[in-house]
Image (spheres, helix red, strand yellow):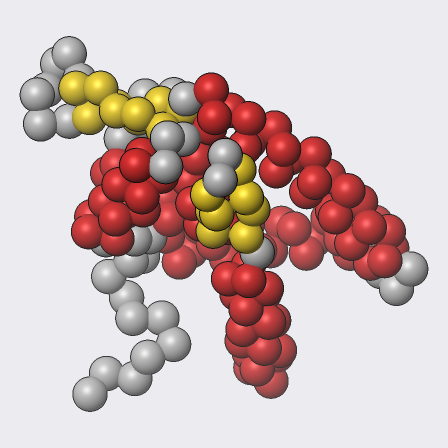
Length: 155
């Protein structure tokens, strides 16, 4: 199975390059894929905290904080102090945030439909289900062991 590791890394490089290039404009500002996904997560889980987002995305407190500051300044989210802990801020989407989620999902549905249709020309439904299961499990492995330096040699 080790000979497939190169295939996985090649896929990740291509996919990350594509997601890095994806931008969406809304209300005179541009959003990155990461910003859009964070807004979507906040929309899916109103009241989520920065710590929870950082854990999910395997990002440092500082990295998540920078993303949240950007999208808050752009008017897509807002925060409120937790009623139980003054140090904790709960995150919520604004109307603009909900609008970007709706627009992204509509566009993504078209793109995803095209991608799945193309994949079904060369893969079976069972193979696609297995692929999605594997990438979900892979993400969980990476997220559940953030201390490990995946793919790095200890020096």
